[in-house]
Image (cartoon, rainbow, N blue to C red; front, side):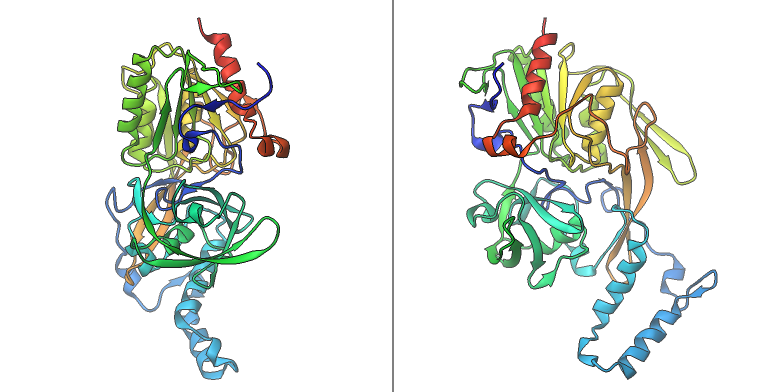
Length: 418
């Protein structure tokens, strides 16, 4: 096949975009790791949380209150003292030393916004990632506020409503930008050329299906000739609807006599635990899906039930450096069970369970409570899933919209199709 782009005949929204990839679909994907908490039952603070004096070892946390009192009484620039800012800085400073992107504090205002993955939200409609401590826009959703304003891939969100995003997690950025439809939010953008601009955007409802499908014949080559024996499924996120949507997609592909299947989890930052396992189970007849290891070493193994869709159809999984959490588990599960070949880049390396504990002030603490192991017992967190065939897009590929990862997937499947 000639070196050129492979593209679907359908709407450009479903086109493969070779751009810097996203971790989160804004307002759809939570922390990128599997989320527990309000969906699986909150834990609440114990009686010690209400105590004003809590000591750990030689450290007495009432000293923090002493410091605050001294600052308010003696600090020269008292106008710079804000109790909420000081409190959150202390909490976030404590959590920052853990170097764990699944553990973080959410203020009462932020936690009030539902963090569950629903597939529908009010926001500006972008996917985002955290890179080098900055919040980067990966892909605007077509015809939504950010896209209409001209915001594009690679733009950096440096402030939200005048507040710097320095050090923010993707979830904090997500929740600060979300809000009731019809309300406005101002985001400050630094463009790739170094210029900055404020955008006052009106939030809108974003209904984003988590699965998009192209049947054989809808995926076309660079000459607009249909590829008649290969189907394509892109999983944007693992929302509560994903397993149902994937089930329908796979049945449609089967009815269309698909002989090879591409599953694209590039830009997919993860989502809901039970949905991810149910989705992967659709593609396996048996075998281990993932292993959960708790802090005390206890392990729970999730296994596939008998029966699978797309039986006998060879699969290629496309992933990139921002495929995280549930996406990584899908790639590893299909690979380790001999069900699929992985093409693309080393994935993000986000393999933790995050449990939300409601705090006495109405906020919440998200804590990584377990890690995930692949069926071959490889760690995912801070490690990632290695592709079988590594293909990293070049600047030239991006400029010319050449998707070499997709081209390789088509090439591999054509070599396997009987």
